[in-house]
Image (cartoon, rainbow over all chains, first blue to last red; front, side):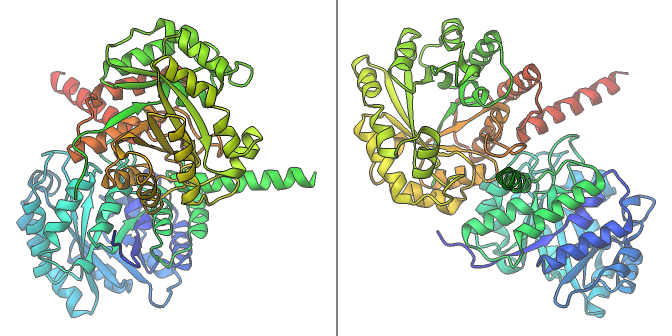
Length: 312
Length: 312
């Protein structure tokens, strides 16, 4: 068993998570969330999305959030930029990294943005060039890499193809995202075995959803492939837009618990993240979707009760 | 990557699950549960517990349940037997397998049954002898094999020691149980690597709890060790007695989804199990704790809605 010595956990709760929650979250809460996450040790926080407020009202305050956070030296604050207008917002907001995206599923691409995968990636050329010209990091995120809500199976070569297109645009990092959480370790293994042949292993990340409970098994399978970057969302923020009541993004607390148990360094303090998960779940009035988070909070409460009864 | 071609899933919901739910479940519901599970393809269903109704009122109707179920040829109906009196009940009820148990944690054994591990296993000698004399299968279940709520770490040699004691009692199958769900794949790997040296791999099972979200990752790690028997509880019945609000037994639906994705045969029909999970969750008025179950139910509902709107 050979596992990486250390991994980078990209915390995506403030962007990917909150963008998929129904509630409108005040900018002040988002700012506190980002700041507490960076203080807990995350070196990379996906913080906002510079998208049209008409389509994504949840992210309308992106500039305010980016202006309000306390930058920690060395922390990468990433933002989503669907087009050049979004990039200009990101640049003005002094984002460290811009994220562009495309699906590995032709059906998903057609249905969601009404164009082919190839066209959708090509449209990001101006954003990619602008990022390079301005010295910003560029990340490419590939959705539906392990399966699609419309076409079902997504062939591995289709994923490899998008990785190559993003590589040609100059992406520093590329995400393999199981957007609907249908993947299992076998497919995870197959995809990473294929994409690591065309892009450096240490710049590929795994973005897993826990919709079918498979996320941690997939992360473990990815670790066995030498993958060193994983996305996670504190308290499992985000839910699943394709199945009401289903689980979405893998919870950061569960991922950190796994890494701690495997002796893999993350640089992040799990106890602080459990607090943050409790804070944001309470702030937006939703159940905490992290199993490890709930168990650790229950354990703390039990310890406090027993302490109180011993004192009584 | 070398995985088993097929595995046996032991469905423990009717016993381990319902014993740890607060509600008193009518015998008729338990009987329907067991019968639907055997019809879905489970070859081994943990069905009841012949324990003192004073301590475990949830299982007071064990004889009634065992008398009421429709036996499927080839299906093993297991029951828990803490002592000779329990064994006599199990024998009269025509159970196929009796289950004895012990902890790998000295602190847990002292605190729960007020004796050492060695003493607790020795006390099962008469039950083990009676099982052999009567041609019943004998299973030994080792709790706290990956960690203990009282002493924390449980050394691997302590697990090996209990495996050897159960082997000496003539156990046909031995369960490695992560009772509080604290294990991760590293410890899972270490424990199975050690116990497979003293007991046949094909007669060892993994019993994982999802309290910290690690169950499927641990099952995947066990598969990589060649383990071929896993316990699971439909809809995640059972909860966690050591942490209120935390998750307990791994949900059968999630395990079946994993096995299907890995191409590992189980002989069990996932769709039927999703229905059973919905049935028992509704019957006892609790949320369905299976992520795959919830996702597949949501998907079905969405398909029905879209069909209805197309017809309209």
